[in-house]
Amino acid sequence: MHRIVLILLAALGLALPRTSAQVKADLRGIPATVYQNGQKIRIFSPDVSETVRIFVISDTHIFRSDEREDPFREYSDRMAKAYNSTKHFLTGEKTNPEESLMKTLELAKEHKADVIALTGDMVSYPSEAGVEWVKNALDACGIPWFYTTGNHDWHYEGMEGTEQQLRETWTQKRLLPLYQGHDHKLYSAEVKGVKLIFLDNGIYEILPEQLDAFKKEVKGTQPKLLFSHIPFYAPGYSTSTVAHPKWGLAVDKNYKIERRLPWPEEGFGKTTVDFWKAILKASRKNGLLATFSGHLHTQQSSVIGPWVQFTVPANAVGGYFEVTVEPL
Image (tube, rainbow, N blue to C red; front, top):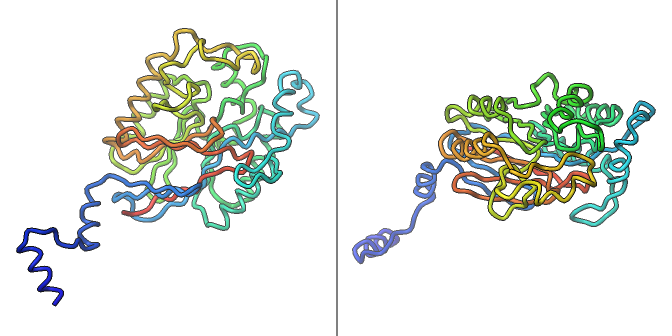
């Protein structure tokens, strides 16, 4: 009887019911699909052979210090008071940065994460005690982890020097243990066939050597994810993003509070804009499935053609993403 109904529908020129096999066949021509439910993100790709589970953590803002910090307290005092007590972004319950990170790491172990991706501002300033505490907590959780710098990790407020100079100085003096031998400017790691690329864009501008390294890393069609601290420009995002057309002195409201040099009046340089274009190109042609950032402390997302961007909520208030990259 069922076959007779199908024959009659076909004879009348009506669409036949589609089988699951037909739907899956149509999906094979799509580079990737994305599903999000709260803090869980699932990315499906025909080029992935096994599931990769990644916990993305950003903006924990650990403020721990000891007597070694005494010579630098004039530069770290404000941020040392910024996140002492917080409220969970979902429940409203009282928490603090250390508790939030430990609970997230426990959850990563419980969910059998393959890797942890840290996108910066793990500490609020480059104290030795803070960096040591973060590294010890990560090492103790037993899950491989990779880190890139935010705009606070290396920043001592009011210290003389350009942001590029200060970033390089304090990355080398304090943050290298978190890089585990990798180049802070840009490096990659492979997990179950998926390439994870980590970019240090904590000064908003992209350096020429970073653009060159990124172009080399994205060659081919291997599935890839890009992690950085500051999100990249997308319509609707704030001006506090990389390559935003309005970024510059006119919209820099925090340079006096943060005691740093103001953003340049002329805005971004050509290399930074070229990097933005390279991300879009890699999303179209080179298997870049998505980009992940922190910095804004809120959960956001954007889609520009094939380029999908996610911004993770601050871990200081309990935020994280659980990302799976799965076969389509």
